[in-house]
Image (cartoon, rainbow, N blue to C red; front, side, top):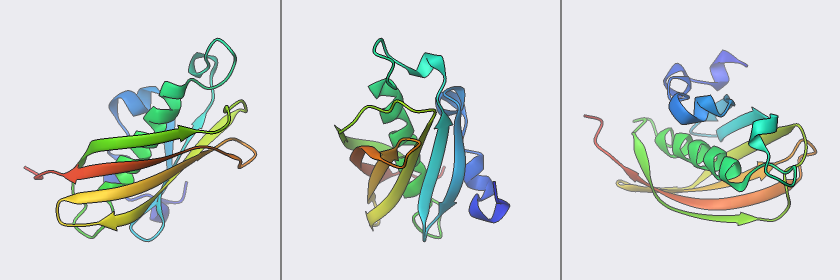
Length: 137
C-alpha cells in the first residue's frame, strides 16, 4: 500500500466492525475517492457460497463514509443518512473491492456512489449513499 495514497487520518478510521471484517484501505483522496478491499474468507459467505449481502453492504457503507469524510480539505466526520443498494451478481471469487466517488459534497450533506467488484473486476453491486456531516467535536 502506497503511503501517499492513504492518508494516516483515513487509515485510522479502519477500526471496529470494518476492521473485524478484514477490510483493507487501498487508496483515499478527494480527487480519486476511496478504494477498499476484502480477501474473502469462508465466514464472509452465505449458505450458497456467495459473499453475504450484509458483508457487501458493510464494505460499501465503510467505503462511502470514508469517501464522504475525505471529499474536501476539512476531512469532516460523516454519518450515513441513507443507502440505496442494488445487487446485480453474486460475489463468488477470492477478493471483493469497493470504489467510492463523490457525486456532490455540500456544507451539510454528501452524495457518494460506490461500486463493488469481484476479482475479475465485474461490477456485482452498486449503491448511492447520502452522508450527513457532523461536528468534529
